[in-house]
Image 1 (cartoon, rainbow, N blue to C red):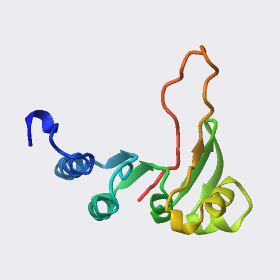
Image 2: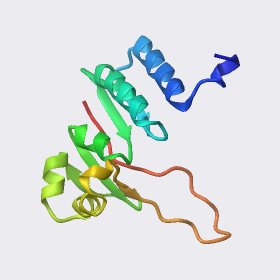
Image 3: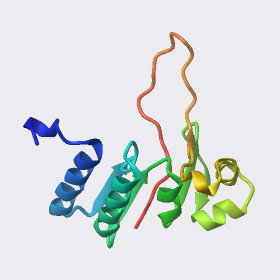
Length: 138
């Protein structure tokens, strides 16, 4: 495993972090891109772990993957730091708006959706910290 887990893959590090969260048993769980940059098999393993970990607790998942948004009880679509749409996945794809547009343009097979369009700073402009994306509550 190496010192501080440097020999673990990104997916393995995420699974270890989820195991630590499970042991801590928090009332609120915040997940930031929990399934990003992993292969499909590892994504399935992480999603299974998340399903058990999020059951019965409030969870907020910051994600760009359509599969994560579709599994959420409620999706918040954020554009330039402002919530522009809010509701369950099925309702958001059924009404005109940024979520439905992105869902259609990427197609269901893509499995990804950009839920937050971050505006890049002008050259030389100071960078602002962080971005915001949809929430997942369970």
